[in-house]
Image (cartoon, rainbow, N blue to C red; front, side, top):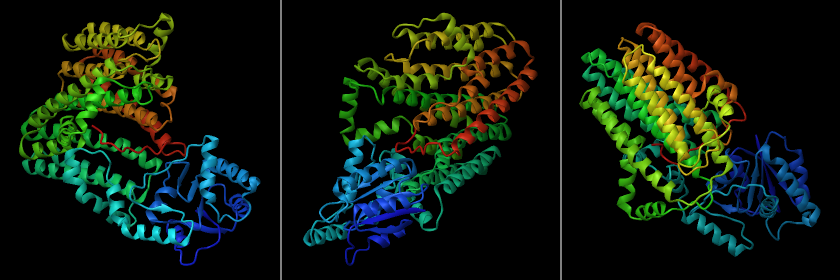
Length: 600
């Protein structure tokens, strides 16, 4: 339960108390600051508590935005302030100082809630202030001002604003013009029937899995149904976020579901297409499916690494960034630039249409070409920005890149022996060369040779050198994606070289399990919760340990035995990372990650 303390003499005709009750608050009335302090102390420690000026005039959605968003410990709008249990102490201190300073008399002169917000700011507490736009939130000082505020409230259609704000501020062309115009109304329909974002997210996952199953039939009817269901899944995927924003229903479990299900849906669909190709046309496209998953995952790692390296960098400017901002000021270039990076909406629409109209092989070819072009475009632009930017990266950014690198005990041991790092651009260069070495040795030699093992040992040394010092260089954000490409690509190359039925599907499962671990790491960092525990990274070997292990298994085992080993390794990694991930994301300390931009 939440408690709202309405401060000051009641205002005749005000609907404030009813509005607060409709938002789930138990309403208490305090005539002055001293009584408000008493009521605050009496409120259960596990309750959200709000202080609201009795003279407040505004839209109900203004109060909803200011007082019910679960993502922020402290939040405020004019005339109202709220604290979740974690921030109750800060609110209590600010109110106690206000009372001792003489605020215990009547509060009709100015707003107690606003004075408390000022005191919280002075204490250094971070108070979230939502963007209200055209919504009204005010504390009128006299009857004339109150009448004007009420007229302002009446002049704005609150529901229209609420529906508009339910849509992400930055989305792709397909999502903006072909999904959001109606999915927002579906989100409202769900809200009015008490459905939660998590339920919609789960429905989206189930729809995508059914789509994958239809694709796996290998029939033309199955492919058509798969394409239609994939679009339906994407509509639900948009709806769950819009429902969360419409109703302000964010949760730690929802953060985990949203962070992982998009990738699970897409990669399960790839597997369904590969199964359908083998069943319907006896066409083995598992290598293409795995290649598409690797390319897409590496694209995401580029996005995450670049953003983590630069989001809090100082003097974060460059001519390239200025040019990009200038292009974004021209309407049509915004949409072109968003479309050519092939974000999730455009990508899923392309996959759905090609699935229904062509073959899985053509679908994967188009996907690989489109993603390769998008990856080249975005990575080249970010490299130019990094080289022309005069920025100093923080310790936090360096730690985030080190966590994204996913270095295991082998790299750590070699790093301790070396004790020296590399200068400047040598860091990403060594990571690239080490990855290229193990990839070349794995792809260009026959299965069963020892050369991939030698390449993997070179990779272990190179990866240790790359992370021997804090990753604060201009292009050090490239280190994690180079590591991902090396590890995933080695698994693909060795499984393809085995040339035995089932090796590539087993490799697909292993890469999917490891990729889940890497996505899990990303979303923990984005939620300021740090990386997964060190024991987990050690238990699954780190990227260099897994790469060396797969190379050794390929050299020591027959192709059939190698397939079984990949399967066992995939299951083991999946069980360990999933159990730890579920434990974390359903715990009380997990962050409510909320994404306002469309993932590429």
